[in-house]
Length: 175
Image (cartoon, rainbow, N blue to C red):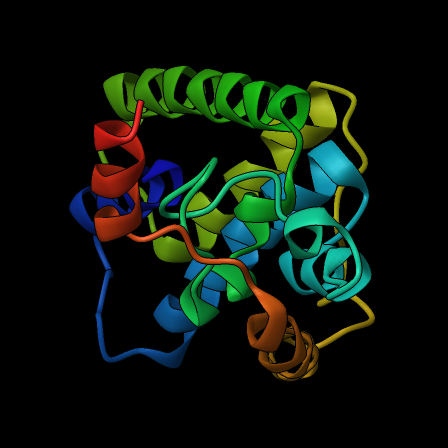
């Protein structure tokens, strides 16, 4: 939901916001990648691609929809944030929260800005806070990362031990 908040601000405050504009769609991925890169030195796709491994505990995931003891689903393995450590998540949340404060100040002074100016504000903010700023799309595409993650998941899922709700009830009754 961190990135949802950023994109909501973007939609509300950019005077030339257009959901159909290809730049708008690219912007969402760009913002996510810039913040991931600032914290980890990797884009979202690079995080997934480098971390996913069927032989690691939980495939390398640090969290997932039904963690810590629930089943890992295919949809869990294609979300970069799920591979971040608790410390990285805290840093990410703190950085994004600071960015909100920064943007709020700009909005109070300027009231509105263009999509391009908003996108540039991400780089200015990260640079000012002495983070390395991502200047390209990274070395791994989302498609490559997702393909690897799904392939690893298919193998992992064959051996995934699933403790169902039924198992929990039986286990509880046997105590």
